[in-house]
Length: 101
Image 1 (cartoon, helix red, strand yellow):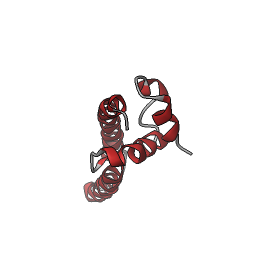
Image 2: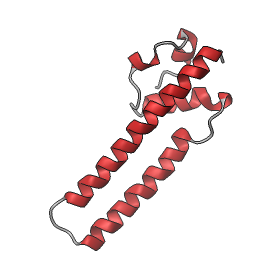
Image 3: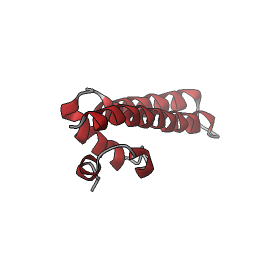
């Protein structure tokens, strides 16, 4: 992996992590402020949301290393957490090798 790809990947990963957390918290907010249901039901729903989001966060973002960078970027791109224009500065080779799907 080129040094320039590694440096840019670290920034892209930070952007994606913020987006992921924003989406997860938005889901929590929807449950918290929805009409109806008891507080206990909302609590249980939020607990489950956070538990699932945390597992997914681990799969997407844990283990910051060059050996995992391509796989992580592919997963992050597959989740729609980073736009193609945010990959500017990365080599075409790295971008094409991490294209989802």
